[in-house]
Amino acid sequence: MIKKPLRHTILINIGAFLSVAMLEILGGWLFKDNFDNDYNFIVWQLSYAVAIMGVIWVNHFILIPFFYDKKSYFFYGILLIATIFLGAFLMAFPNWIGVYKMSSFLIYTTGTGMAAFFLRRNMIIRRENDEKEKLQKEMELNYLKEQVNPHFLFNSLNSIYSLSRQQSPETPDLVMQLSELMRYQLESSKKDTVLLKEELEFIENYLLLEEKRLSKRCAIEFVIGGDLLDFRIAPMLLIPFVENAIKHGAHSTNKQSTIDVSASLENRTLHFSVVNSKPPMVSSSKREGLGLENVRRRLNLLYPNSHLLEINDGEKAYRVNLSIDLTDSLVNQLEANPLD
Image (cartoon, rainbow, N blue to C red):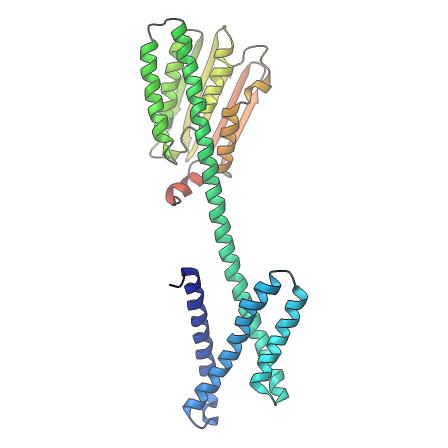
């Protein structure tokens, strides 16, 4: 059985030959009376089509792959000229004027054929590169998601462990809350996108868990504004900013601290903000952990031209402002055209 790419190439070239033959017959129809009969006329016109396509085929299937593509441009030019001259010679000899005219005609048709050939090849190469780039991005995103999951679990278990050391009566309830959070995390990790309202509910539940663990040492506020509708977002994309605020804010000091988280939707753009009080004697270099590094890479991959991330490490507060246009992103492309 002929493989699909080869069959496709054969069909294209058969179609090209039939098109050239039809054009030759129609183009010479006015001179049909110069021939003894219709048969001789058709055979003569078909011979022109064979000469034209013969030169094009020799160029496409022999000269380009064996000389041009291997950068032997000098030999390619010499052999192409020789092929064109040979085709003209076989068609018009011993009429040298005819050979000259046929050579000019074959140069024109060969150039047209080369333009079509390189255009089609460039389109194929571009499509293959786009598919490879899309596949590479999906592979990298899956790798990053696998890293985020254990990172979140590690932070959550640390919180539960601290309460268990204090023998808090709320520990069993917090374990159940954690199990719900982990269930959502496991389910969302199998998807390219989740509903924005579900992702924000997940963050809210996580903050409630941390608020119980931190007792009265930290005042946490979470505000959601705007109509979320059915907008979707990459899963576990926002939680690293919240984790970072708790870890390097409330967890790093025994003094009173604050964490303010807000999310609003305006004109299809999500505005997400996290502000936490900054304890003294905390160097800024400690803020860039695995979670923030991963979320930066995910944002660049999923929303390359439709997000703005601003981080301000002030003297008394650490601020994160993130804006994402949810209407134009790789997330939507992957959701609409998932890879097999």
